[in-house]
Each structure stands twice: as structure tokens, then as C-alpha cells.
Image (cartoon, rainbow, N blue to C red; front, side):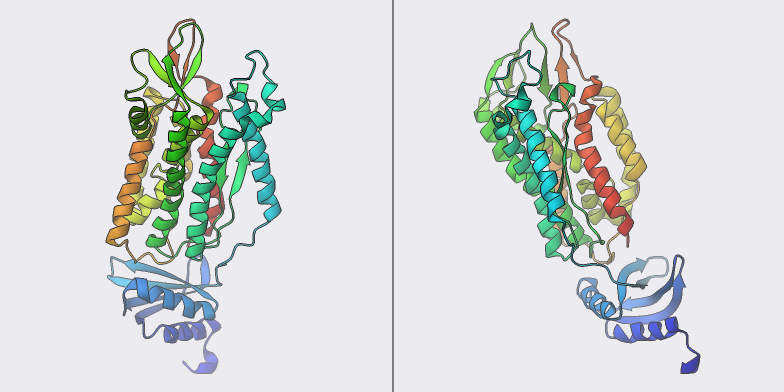
Length: 417
């Protein structure tokens, strides 16, 4: 075709093909794809390993104002380079005042809940914590340190990979503690304005949060348990029992020399220990291997699109747990059903995990098993001595990370590559 008869997209296709000629041999070219009439699709074969070729291809296409998306067509045995018009942002411009305002509000709400745990609180004074916030600093400092470590793990790893991620948005929970608010916060979220580069970056970003958060939660828990004491379970008054995970039960055994609760005894935990326990719970909830949860990122980085096969078994397991163990799992099953059945792929979906990262991925899923708490909260009432997990007010507990995950999902799903 004469040059003067070529359309703009044909000119663009020729420039794109020339730009990657030493890295990608082209077998055929498609001008426009459904939903992206200005896109150009090149099919052929990479001339270098994808982990080395993609960064160079992406940089060259960026200079031409295109975003490179790399896939493999298994049916035809061809690599596919999709050039989408426009470039993705690489820097997130934070609105510091918003982050500081939300963090300050969360400090106040966690101080309030922590004050409510103080032994100095009169049992009959429901509003005492509101006027004695300073009593709550051990709990607030411990819990916020864990949550901040978790989110900054994501943030700094994302920045390392030049993914435009926001600073953490903390979510305060301004609800009275006698209405079931036991943490004072619904956690924190970060926004990602672009897909990650490849599965290796996806794993590193997804795993960094829970692993770093866990590294803070464990010493906080150990410190808190050292401030706690073992006593007989009361028979004449109601109380709330935090649930056991394998890791939590083991740490209690190492500190107190016995499995608790047991023999009519249990540890009456200090507010710092409760914050550490909450850190383990938040870690396990985030590591549920589905959707946009951290565990969903880890599973996708390990298995790719095959990770979707686990969605329905996970929903079924959560429903079963809701029926047999704790009703809060029904909420999680609903969230996974509504929002967790898809996962955005990375820009380079050909590069696989190396051996070291496969080991890390398996280790992170093992952390999920160790921190998973089938019955997070149990209430025991004095009149019957029987326990129950059916208090509707404590459905705020699963909302802690459920709403945080939903917020993260809504701010990242629209940036699929």
C-alpha cells in the first residue's frame, strides 16, 4: 500500500513492529481489538526471555505513547504483544491531608477502644472510655503498628517495582465498644492505579504486607502475653474468648507451658496481647486465597488463570465454616462470590515465578494455615454457661478486613490490563 494511503493505525503498527524487531519476531499483525480500536496486536515469538525482553519492549512502546501487554496464546503456540494506546501512570500523587486526617481519626477510635479494655474502667459506666482516651495507648500503639507495617510493606514494595500505589488510607470505626466495636478500625487500604509488571512483582507486593505485618504482630503478641495471666474461667459472669489459630495456640503454649484454654483455665490477655492476636487474625483474613485479597494475589502469581479453579471450593469451605463454626464466614463467602471470581493479570503474563519465589508463595500460604482462626470470637453467657457465636453485633469483626478488601478491590479492579 502506498505510504500516502496508509491510515494512522497502520503507520503506528509499522513503528511498533520496527521498535521491537530485535526482541520480537512478528508473524501477523491485527489492527484494533474489541473495545480498543486504536490498539495493535502483534503475534509471533520473543527473541529473549520474557523477564529480560518485556522491560525493554515496555520502555520503547512508552516512548511511542503505548502500553505493552504480553501474553502467550497456547492454542496457536504464539506469543502476543498487545500495544494499547496511552501510558499508565508511574507515580501516585498523594493528598497528604486526607491520609493524615484518616490516620488521626483512627488513632482516636483505637484509643477509645483500648481505653475500654482498661482495668480502671467502671463496669457500669459505658461512656468512661470516651473521657479517658489516654488509657488506651498500649492497645492503639500496638494495633496501629501492625496495620501500618502491613500496609507499608505493600507500599514500599510497590514503589520498588514502580507501581503507582498510594499511601495507606486508614479506616476509623467510630462505633461505641458496647455495640461490638472491639478494634476501633476497619483496617487500612492502599490504591494501585496500574497493573503490576509480572507475576514476580505481584507475589512480592502481595506477600510483603502480611509477612511484614506478621513480623511485627508476633513480638507484639509475645510482649502482650508476658503481661497477661492465666486464671480460672469465671462461672458467674459472661465473657468473650478470642479464638485459637495454630500459631496463637503454640505461642501461648511456649509462654505458659500448657494448651489454653484447657482444664477450666485460660489466659486473660492484656490489651497489647489482644492487638497482637488481632494482627494474626487480620493476616489470615487477608491471606484467604481469593480475589483481590493478598492471598488471591499470591495464588494467582503461583498458578495464573488456574487460580480461578479454587474460587468455588473456597466459597463452599467458607459457607461450611459459617454453618458449623462462625456466622461471619457467610459474609466472607458472599464477598468472594460477588467480587472474588476474577483477578486482573499482570502486564507481562508470560514471566513465571522463579524457584525462590515459588518457595515464598508456598510459605505465605502456609502462614495462612497457621494463622487461620475458625472461630475468631466466642461469647460465654453466665446464665447457662454455654458459649455462642451468634451475636449479630460481632459481625463487625469480619467487616474489619472485609470492607478493607472491598475498598481495595474497587480501587484496583478498574485498572485491569
